[in-house]
Amino acid sequence: MKKLLMIAPFILSVLFFACDDDKGNPIIPDDTTTSTWIEDGGYWSSLVDAESETSFVYFSFATQETVAVTDAQAPTSSAWDIAFKRYHVQLNGGLSGNKGVVGVDLAVAGSPDSTDFAAVVDTSDITISDWMEDNYSLSLDEWYSYNPISHAVDPTYYVYLLKDAAGKYVKFQVIDIFDGGQPPDMGSVKLRYVYQADGPDVSGVPDTLTLIVGVGTGYVDFSTGMEVTPADPENSTDWDMAFTQYEIHLNSSLWGRGYASAYPAYQDSSLTGGNPTNFDGITTAVTNNTGYFTDVISSALTDWWYHMFDGTQSRLPSRDHVYLIKVDDSVYKLKIHSYYHPDTETAAANITFHWAELE
Image (tube, rainbow, N blue to C red; front, side):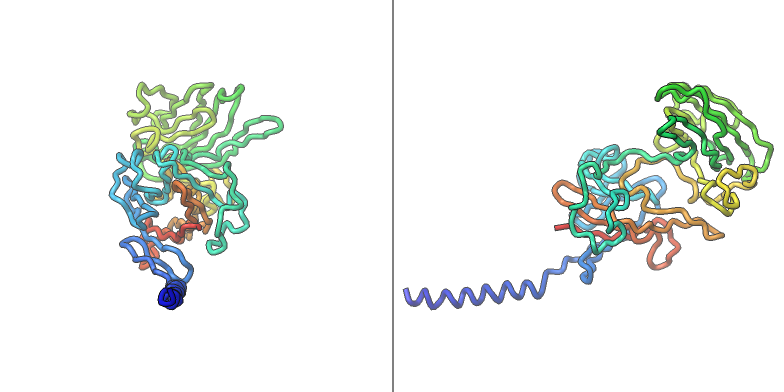
């Protein structure tokens, strides 16, 4: 019995120093092809090549690595958590997948730490209603204003540049909304536009077009200057954009097989002279393809970037927002650091993001 009592303190001593050694020398995770562990800060820095304009690249927090999933497989695959394609970001939940992944933009949730990555340590400020699953985001979403008191719907007169379903340039603005009833009856809309079949010159005399939308959908074909009724809109290139229930859908990506995309000209002061309704002031369409956007499936991270024109090209700097992403029982904080490759600062869609799992 005495021998056992003498051995016990020795064992306890060994266990004590072993634990103390673990505390002083924590295990450092191994880096992966995509991710590097930043010990000074305790987070991962991941770099993904999202340059493809046709396919997403998929990433798993559990493996700290991109995964081999195709766009066709993604909606039913649980191997991925977050995906990138150019400036688009999707989570594996809602319209994008069946894993139930949801996210929160801390700036939208009103968190005081919305841009302070290190300060975010828990989810105590987040409510159930803050979590968002993937839905869709429209390129043309600020063309009208709504007065909650009078319930009036009026055009903002903002000017947009458009590439139509065939890739031709159009300049347009909504100049009237009338005869609307209770939603979803949006009544009629009137457009002012310049269509250019050859090149980016949009300085011509404008035409107008009135669409009777009502509770249905009004399809616009700028090349003919007419409202059209395609038999199979999803497989037709005979329309460019469509009005339905106070939404404008472009003939590309989500809604059709065309190549329609929109440029928010009203945000570009170099075009408008600081007046977002300056229709006549815009005489030449922007030809930089990266400035044109299609309708896409959106997530809590959709607005991670903002548009900046530096006089020669469009840039997409990060807003530096911190996001929370919930995957099963785990919650990760994430911040998109840059849209450009760290080695060149010019190669777009090489996205660096910082992230860590919250305890």
